[in-house]
Length: 81
Image (cartoon, rainbow, N blue to C red):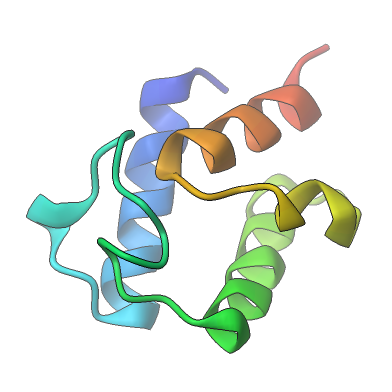
């Protein structure tokens, strides 16, 4: 899965499940400051991402994620190979 496809899927999830405006979702967007997610939303997002890639992601990997690009990097890492 390439980064553009991942971004499309992530955008769909953020718009549908977290009511984030699509135009706010850019790789540079901060999950908390720009997209107004909170810690509970972050946990829900982890679940959504795991469902998307059908793999378990360790919570520690997500703790450092602050931007959409960080999430894209995590997903890319788990979908390579």
